[in-house]
Image: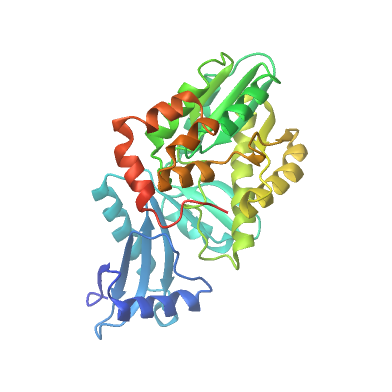
Length: 347
């Protein structure tokens, strides 16, 4: 045991990555596309016998060689990854695991947030993490009917504004959750600011950071699910399990979403939402999209305009506050990031 070593694996180390892929395949999983740190445990012959990875503040992609299972190697890998995370300043950690391995992570100090039966469990390393988040939300609870919108707004468009205005007119209080993961081309701080400016004329809108509990497509794991449609469906079902708890804390009785017939991801998500939310006593309102020149307004179209420098087209697509930001010098780093991106249209 003392001759086993753990070290980082770099993207250029093809030999090590090939061995890691073989280990993961033996466990019925594949290497996730979103990883920013990979480690491997080597035996005395420099063969990889265990592995694990990180992305953001999540731990993922664990595997141990069948020849070495039962030796406590996974504990050591996870301890190593947690030390890496702490050095990064990430103390609130999350992981996704299969149903049959959840107990193992409970024994290591992780606590269940939500699960999808027969598929996965979402966990964190703080006993009161999610419950504390719910308690903070309850402080904004108000009498009357309450609705909700979950919004990434990458960036905030006239379509987003129309959705919020329409929803706000149908309830006493509208809780607007801004996805706070920084997994988008427009940073969270900018997205939140543009949302706040774009809804400032609506007195019954209450904005919240989603925190780490409402997760993006980029962060949701795909490595132990069979295909892309199962990934999208599992993400939707997990997100809805978490949202039901949030809705209960705030007495939310309806959720509003915009239709998006051109997006496979949104189409599957909206279908599952329309099926599942009424079972929990929550109405699901799928609203028609606002259009410009006969086409639905989308953040993808706005990003394409920004990427190609077609600034004169933005006035018909975004509120004056969003337009003013992208015309300012302050937006230069974000514009450069968008222009350098290989793909700005999301399907």
